[in-house]
Image (cartoon, rainbow, N blue to C red; front, side):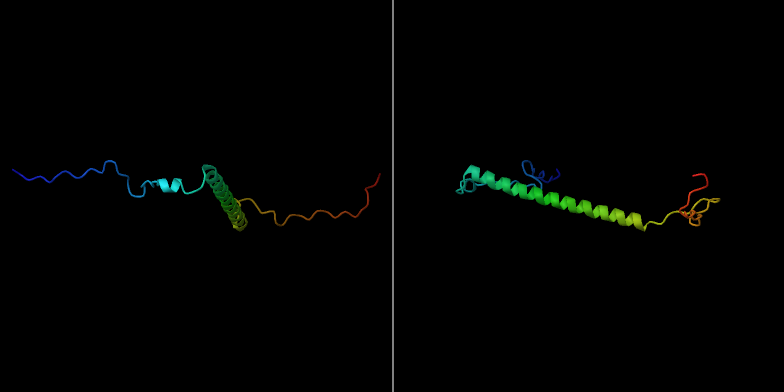
Length: 104
C-alpha cells in the first residue's frame, strides 16, 4: 500500500486577496446621524469628487491638445518627388500704381 497525502483544503467560500468585503458594524449605522444627514453628506462628497474628476479630465485634455499642437509645429515636411520644384521662388505680384487702365 502506498501512502497518499490528504487532499488540499478547499478555499470554497473565500475571496481572493484584495477582494475582501468590508462589513459595516451596527455601531456605524447608528452613529448619531440620521439617514437624511448621511445622504446629504454623501451627496456633497459625490458632487465634490465628480467636480474634481471633471477638472482632471479637462486638464488632461488641454495637455493633449498642447502636445498635439507642438508635434504638428515641429514636424518637418517631406521632400517633393522628382520633377517638382518648391514654390519658394515664386514671382512677386505686380504692385498697383493706383491708376486705371485706358478707357475708364
